[in-house]
Every structure is written in C-alpha cells, then in structure tokens.
Image 1 (cartoon, rainbow, N blue to C red):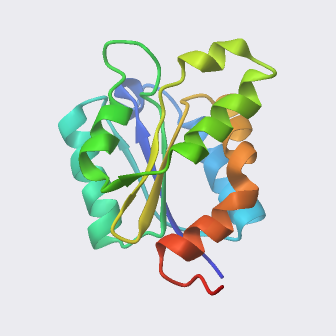
Image 2: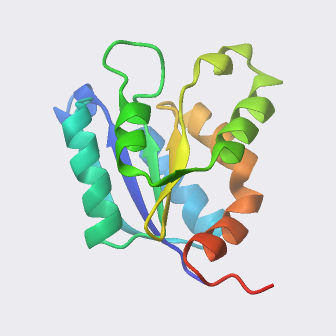
Length: 161
C-alpha cells in the first residue's frame, strides 16, 4: 500500500529561502524507500504556531494524508513551537511512538532528551514530529519505521485482526 504522506517543515530560515531543507529530503527518501509511501504534499512554514496549525489542518483534512511528518521546531528554543501546534490539532496522542524515538536515539546521543516532539492522530491521519536535522530525522524515523505500517492500518481503519 502506498501511504499518502505529507511533509511539513517548520523553519524561519527555510520559509525565507535562506536554508535548503535537507531534513525533508531525508524524510522523502525514507518514506519512499522504507515505507513505500507517496509524498502528496510538502510545505515549509515559519516557526509560527498559527501557521503550523493551519498547515497541519490542511494536510490532514484537505489533502487527506495518512501520515504527516513534521521536521523542525521541536527543541527548547523560544521559537520552537511545533509540539504545541501539533497538540492543538490532534484528537488523541500516541506517546509510545515519541517514547520509542527518544529511547532508541538517546542510547547514542543523550542530547535527544531535549527533543520535545509528539505524535498523535487527527481524524484518520497520524502526525509525527521529527527533529530539524537530517541526522535527527533519520535516527528518529528509523526508530519507529517498523511500526508505522501497522499504526497506519489502525489509524486509517484498515486494520484486520
């Protein structure tokens, strides 16, 4: 099954065209090669909670993505508001995915304890916050990749026991 996937990058510099979005490129490669997914939309927005919220709603409700992967805005800096924006649009949190990412990556890099990303469900879409660096994206997404197909079957109502 080709999971309909959207990528949302939260980055002030990226939104102004001052930085190449290499983290989204890593997401695209992993989704297409490891998950067998199809990228249906890609956005860059500044680190503004209202803009992140609007983009998440559009990606879930209008584009009807099965999976939305965000990158950026998940650390401790004052402008890092992706988890807060995500929390405002999800209906249910999926803490196990966030815990698995932190636990797996923290074994190699203790700084991951500062990663505040969350995962949750809006309608029939799974939203996963990822860090803003290519390495962080790869490590965190790899930590949960094996569980994403089953999670997506459940979230989209296709799971058969």
